[in-house]
Image (cartoon, rainbow over all chains, first blue to last red; front, side):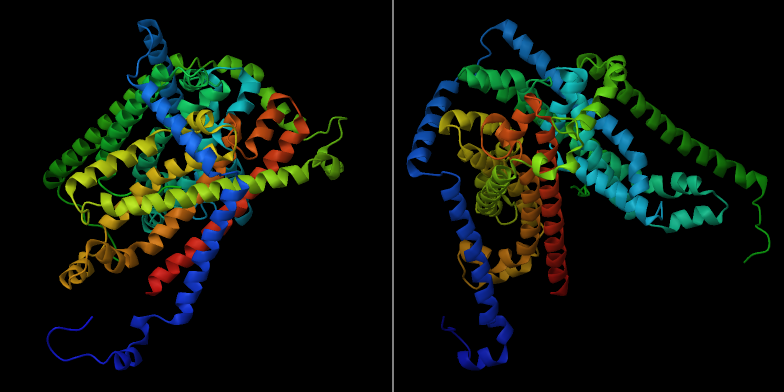
Length: 287
Length: 294
């Protein structure tokens, strides 16, 4: 581009003067190589995972038909609507119980796994690895395992959410505790407190609001997990949804999806308001 | 240090103590109210979810024995005594595991590209038009709120049993989740470069390219890596609904009581997730350093 006013710019001189602004060619080449490799991997994935134009076109056409059949969303009958409503309530109940019990169980473990509370490397590493292993297993897999223990039904679902969120909360809590300012704790110790009192009066007051907001945030995300947990028979609305989709009852499937959307949005709104009341508009450290 | 702490005279101390008591009492009352609300919610939920501690207590040994059982081969020997027998299907499983990773990767890549494009349209500070901003946000919300397995269920019917529905389901959910995180990042950028570039006569696309993208790129990559890790876990259960990956074999092993296979598959999945976890964490830390160095 030619500057319209002022002195004309000698491009070569500028290039010599500010090499950084024009970008090293080596860096550019490296960035291009990385981007090329990433795209190549995606293309390989398309081939390996059986993406074909015919399949995509057919699929999208099918989706179009399904969408048409979904309008208007309809539960079928008032009795079915009641069944779905009950299942939705069950879903929220599963999420609530799973989340809260996981938080209560994870609190002591979070303390154990935080190096500023328990200064023992072995305890620290062991508890961290255990939490990682628990988190590595998806909620649905936990649901299958708990079904073996307490049988089919929402109880297994609540236990599954509890187990997998126990891993998440343990990690989040221990990180929150490690991020706490250590000076209040030192002050409490200097005033003659024992280590337990240090945790109670020096650390917990700092981290409690953070943890509460994390729990609230996960309550919403667990409501979503709880909606699909029914697919393996662990209670909630997922069972009905899977059934309606498999039998191609699109009116009812759409109705259930809308119900889920409404419930999740309502919980999101409520938990957002509560979080705001607790910690203000601070972002929550997650995952 | 002062040798003795001076005590305030009683008449001045009393109102201070009273005020202190009042604040503490108000706080306690608030906490008690919150606890009471939570207790009621928990009790109602427990009724709805058919919680039965007695049943749990009576059968809790099955939880332990399940794990004891999956650590034994068909003939009762502990699995680690015959690793070849334990991982008899290793060749097939490793291929399935690679497929699972690929599903997560392609899904994350597609979703991240979509989320990236959407973020600049949905960020209030740079959106070309408020209506566009509003509309894109609602779409992202929809993509994020519907669980990916629900998309997978519907797509399996539309696209047939194969990894394709799994990839698409993950891509859509990722677009929604990342799109939101991305536009929040974009909303926090320094607006001066944007003003400068657009004052120099750049179009909207050029402004985004030269003023906004350089500010947000490292954050965006960091979020994408985190999401990839989440998606690996998600892809491991896509097989539950017939959408490809290792989940199919796992659910079969659990349902048909091939105990040793369950432990082998779980171990593979956990190890993979942990490795990915470590790898992405390393990468993200390096990115953060890069960002701080600038």
